[in-house]
Amino acid sequence: MNRQKILRFLLHLLFWVFIVVFFTFIYGVRDGNYFEIFQILLGTLPLDIMYTYFLIYALIPVFLLKKRYIWFVVLFITTFTLMVILEWTINYFFLYPSIYSDYEKWKDSIHYFSGAALMLYVSLGFVILLASAIKLVRFWMQSQQARADLEIQHRKSELAMLRSQVNPHFLFNTLNNIDALIWKDPQRASETLVKLSDMMRYFIYEATTEKVPLEKEIDYLNCFIELQRIRHKDPDSIRLSITGASDGIQIAPMLLIPFVENAFKHGVTGKHNPSISVELTVNPKEIRFDVLNYLSTRTDTVKDPGRGIGLANVRRRLSLVYPDKHRLSTVQAEDQYKVTLVISHV
Image 1 (cartoon, rainbow, N blue to C red):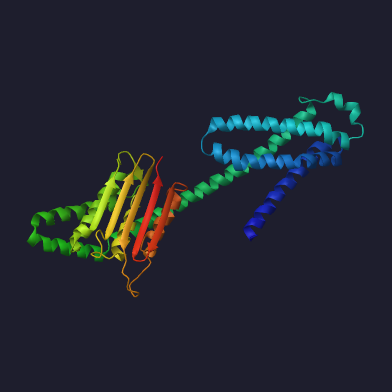
Image 2: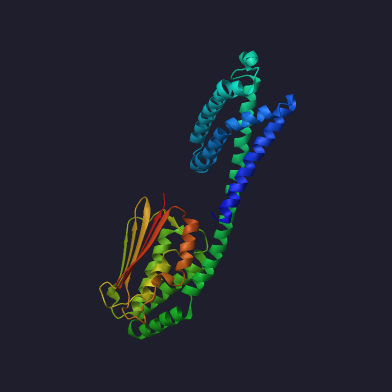
């Protein structure tokens, strides 16, 4: 057990010690029967603990935090009522007779709606209210921290995108290719220059928000791959396949391109057809993105594609933007490397 778990255990223990001491004092100060109250509280403490943790680790996360309010209210009222009835029954038939010697004299004066029962309702309600408040405050603090982390990560992403996208090597190669095309095919050179301009406009001005239309990301992918095709002797060995309707779907900007960049950086073209394959499949429930490339088999050039610029950053962004809504897998078999990303958008 590490220090964090030990500290958490001690804090929980301290919470329950406080509850027992607090109510022993509150209920015992009236008649001075502190020890009897203490015994009763210990007797029902396991049930209080069980129900409190059921509330803060099951009902609140599954229903309240996911905005299923009606279900939360119904289940809370039902379980709270059952817990009160159970605790009162234990008190009435087991704890009171064993703790109070004169119980037979006054047992007929108490019932489910008597003052003693009201004390039970108030105490149990106070416990779960306090525990729930602590849980919700902790959740709020975690969400605020996650939001701050996401903002920091977003800023880092912008810098990383600028470093990885607008780098001299990429620009010089593209501009040199355009320069060569001016003499061979002026029309194509003009179209290529427009693509480069569209790319720069997108990631400098448009890709600064939290979400962008998926169509914009697809356009960016198309432009990037078209520019890469110019550099290769066999442009047909680079395949891009997009299936499904992307209308109305939003996605975090610049999330897909690092995987494609990585394929061109570490991939070997001309060895297979296609040598680099990019497939995007969109359906009503999820987005699936597959990137496959072939690697050099020379021992002095084989690199781990998972260590490409920006990929660690993408993994972090995925964990922040799509927690529990994405699956990312990388598989390397012999000279083949494949990345699969699935994002749920429902």
